[in-house]
Image (cartoon, rainbow, N blue to C red; front, side, top):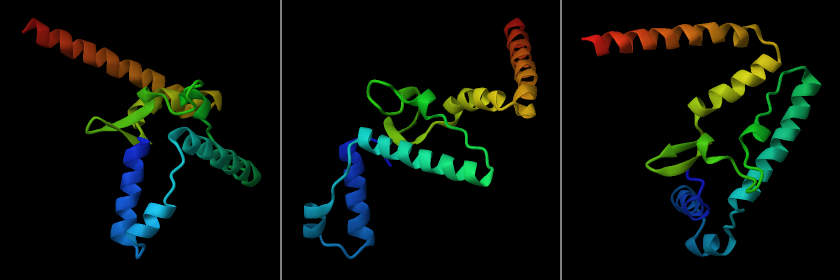
Length: 137
């Protein structure tokens, strides 16, 4: 689903019209969608509650919201948004999140987070070697 307020409202409207017994009149009167910034605040509140439950049960919770949110707008920075057909999607871009999670996992001292750096370095060296070989031919 899109992040844009109008497009998100239309997506929900279409969903309810096609998959529920709600009438058009009912939806026109009652369907209210919080703004993107308000929805982002709701996510932060949910994450806080989830983090408390994780702590209560002894699970790790990796909080990345502060790393990916724009402090001025209160929404996710564009570089972390998944793009579909030139429209920002509600889901985050996994590739853009790799460095964020990697840093968090290193802070938690997870062994794999430290080991993966040498693997990435080897991959970059390999890519450079392959590129040089293709340029030579």
